Length: 290
Length: 293
Ligand SMILES: Nc1ncnc2c1ncn2[C@@H]1O[C@H](COP(=O)(O)OP(=O)(O)OP(=O)(O)O)[C@@H](O)[C@H]1O
Ligand SMILES: [Mg+2]
Image (cartoon, rainbow over all chains, first blue to last red; front, side):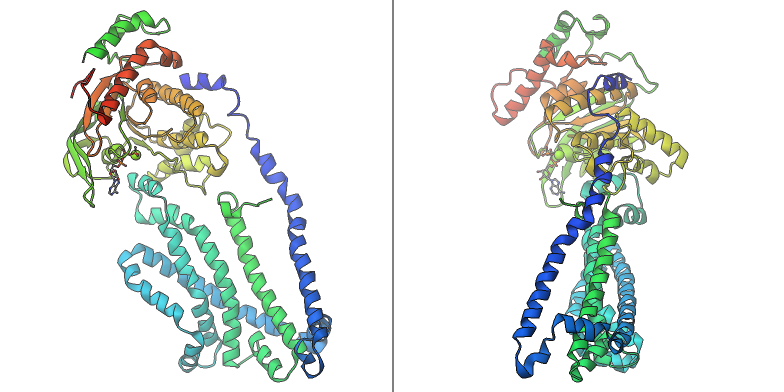
């Protein structure tokens, strides 16, 4: 009660909250435009360099670097181009998404398991690292033998490539729980499950979301590599890339490359958006810098 | 043993602001006007407690300490002498290597040096955490959270995340969180050590207000002699590692204590006694006012 009396004659601190006004109303209005300026400028520069490069190519080597405009018209917008490349884009996106989702599910499970059982983490981590170091193209033929030339075999390749960053980033986040906070949970007899759910898991989110972002990029690479290797079924971007290379269809080859990187950007962009959303209110990484 | 006695005697003459009549305040542990039912019940007792860490660090040796409800005991001592260790043992986080410990564990408040707020939770959700862990029903939890938030003066900031609070406000939130368990034993580990002087003084006064209202048994670790004397009914001085209690200085001022008690000459004398004891630990010299234990 003395406390409450004293509070009243204090000048500033307990004013009605003002920060929200400054924090939420202002930045969104300005944000998108300013952020787009730099990438757009760079885009113009890159396209100009590309154009310059293609003009400097002479004679028999000119086909190696078609001009940006001809790639756009002949390699992407022409009917025979997009009718092949767009479906391929869809299939590769599907393969990469499937593989990534499986890698995420597996990575979360493995991460949680290794966190739960310390001895298991110590015992198995070297093998996890070893697994990561195996060149995927070397095991691809084994996959083909084991699972046939199937969607499943390709998805396994994607999972193998995209898996590693998820358990490692997850474990890093789980282990970086502040000692004082852990003490507080223990002090009130919180079970392991409660500590995991209310402390370790949310604490690991920033790391985990970074892991997702890295894995997403890898999944796209994995999907294209898998398709290039298996050369089977409905053609995805990987198969088309090889095909156009063999047929010396460089316009469409470039079109394919552009769509591949758009796919990678879309994956990356999605997870960047996701982590902004999840972490916005509390983590430094999700704060906008002017 | 002589210094506090002198202080007690001079107190009535030097403090016109004293709310208590001099006659009743003559004893160092004068009972407060607001008495709770379990006044004086020992809620923490250490006898012969020692602790060695696994790596061989001998942190505490032969600590005897008793804290009763309505008592706020400050612990001062140099850095690394084992103060935090003592609190961790009291809370049950760390088992003592030897000696006997008895402590209230159900209604236990523990405020750490950092606010230890979960950054992904709002102030209200952070304050409600302990109730949540203990399975307090939602409606009751909401009431407890609201009253704790009001008590520390954080009303209006319930939906803020910790990163948008100042250091002082984070400490208030941490305090509010501990208050939700209705502590009967309250441990403070340098709670205001990281704050600026003005905020620290204000929070001292507010915490004292809460203490005067709740009459818990408190252990308050601090590096500031002024803070220790202002807050507590007894200041305990610890030696360097392995930490043992080298002096206990009673603080003979009744609660509630007005803020300007800090400018009282009698206050200055108690503070000087504590400082002198601390200084003697660093450079041993003929002790001027060696005290009990
Ligand atoms: N987990 C641990 N393992 C080994 N030694 C430790 C551990 N924790 C603390 N110590 C040591 O025990 C001694 C006492 O530590 P403690 O944290 O209790 O000191 P303190 O009095 O709280 O210091 P400060 O005032 O700086 O907070 C220190 O020398 C410290 O190095
Ligand atoms: Mg400490």
